[in-house]
Length: 484
Image (cartoon, rainbow, N blue to C red; front, side, top):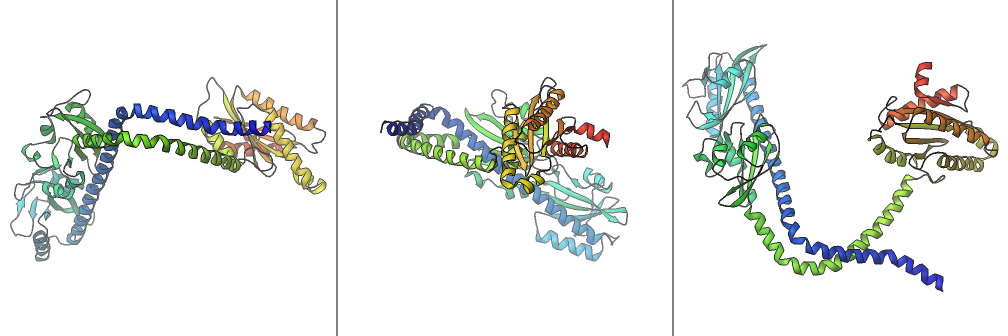
C-alpha cells in the first residue's frame, strides 16, 4: 500500500508542479500585461500594414502588367500598318479612348508624331519615354504632365516592330487619379491611406490633401520626427528598396507608415495609419483585462496541463516514428532529422564531421544458414556495440536491412575517425557469438561533401570499395576515388 501511495505521489508531482507554474506565470503575466499590450498591438498593426501594403503592391504590379499586355496587343495589331493615321487605326484609337476616360491610347511614328484617334497629331519627339521606346525599350515613365491635356499622368510606351526594326511607338497614358481610385483607403476604415510613389517622391497615387504638394517628401516634411526615423533616413531606405515601418508625428500624435517596393519599375507602395487606431484598441482591451485575467488564471492552468499531456504523447509518437523497432536506435528518417542540423554548423579548430556507412558482411548467408532470429540478434548486437563504441554526441542509426550509419560530430581528426572505425571492425571480429564481419565506408566533411545526401553517397561509395577489397575492412572515400 505504501508503495502504491508513493507511486501515485510521484505521478501527481509533475502535473502539480505544472499547475503551480501555470498559476505563477498567470500572475506574472498580469503584472506585465499592460506593459506588453501596446507593443503587441503595434506589432500586430505593423504586420497588418505589411500584409495590406504587399497586397496593394501586387495589385499595382498586376495592373501595370495588364496594361502592358493590352498595349502589346495594340502594337501587334498595328505592326503591319506603316501609316499610323489610316482609318482602321484611327477608329481603333477613337473607340478605345471614348470608352475609357482613364486610358488614352496613341500610336507614334519614329518622327515622334503621336496619333490618338482625333486626327490631331501631337509632337512627342522630345519626350524621354518616346526616345527610350523608339530605341527598343519598354518604358514606364515618371509622373509628368500629359502631352495631351496637361494632367499629371504615367505613360506606358513600347516599340512597334516590323520585322526586326522598330517602326513606331505604342503609347498608353493613365492619370495619377486612376491609381488613387484603384487603391482607395477604405481598408483602413478612414484611419489611414495607401499611396504609390517614385524614387524622387512623385506620387503615382495619393490621398486627400497630398495634391497640394509636388512630392510625397514635401508633404511628410511638414511633420515632426523623433530618434532614428528622420526624413533623410526614410528617403534613404525607400531609395535602397527596403521594406519597413516608419513613425512620424503631427501635433504630438504618432502616425505609422509602412513602405515596400511595389514590384513594378522603381515604384514604392506606402500605407499610412493613425496611431489613434492602436490607442483605441489598447483602451478597449485594457478595460476588460481585469475580468479576463481572472478567468485566465483557471483557463491557463487547464490549458497548460492539456498541452503538457499532449506534448508527452506527441513526444512518444515522435520517438516511435524516428526509432528503429528492432534495435531501438534511429531509423532512416530519424537519422536525417538528427544529422542535418549538425551539418549546418561548421566545426571549429580543424575538426571534422564524419559519416560511417557500415554493412554486415554476408548477412544473407546468416539468415539462410542460421535463421532470421539469429540474424535479428546480430543486428541488435551490432547496434548495441555501435552505441558503446562511439561518443554520446555521435548519431547512431540503422539505415535499413543490415546497413547502419554513424555520424561523428566534431571529430578531432581524420586519424581518430579511422581509429574508431578500425576499432569497431576489431570488436566485431573479437565477438565469438557474432557469426560474420563488417565493412565500413567513411566520408569526411567538408572534403567529401557538405550536405547529408552528398556525404551519404560518398560513404556508400567508400563502402563499395571496402567490399570489393575483400570485406572486413575500412575504406575512405578519398582513397576510393584515387583507386578508381
